[in-house]
Length: 118
Image: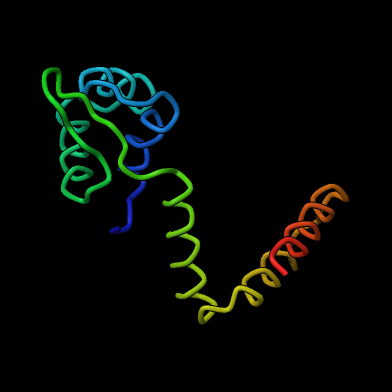
């Protein structure tokens, strides 16, 4: 799967949140939330179809997501860790946590996740 750009993620969000919908419905939603015109939305939908992230069916030019939000998050995270931390998840986590104040509940969640992975 190719990287999804911010504009493409704006189209994916309503598809993930509410499921398949027509390109016209997406255009209305993105006009309201982003100020996009119909042509902009249709151009981005075309790019997502070409990348294999969205399917289109007729009648009605209904768009449906072919990838999940979690898949995109995993790909983006893996890419970031590879590019900036030489693939080391430990270095990534260390850098992330060094600048953050964790709430006790968040620290407990992280401990549980690590126990689960062990």
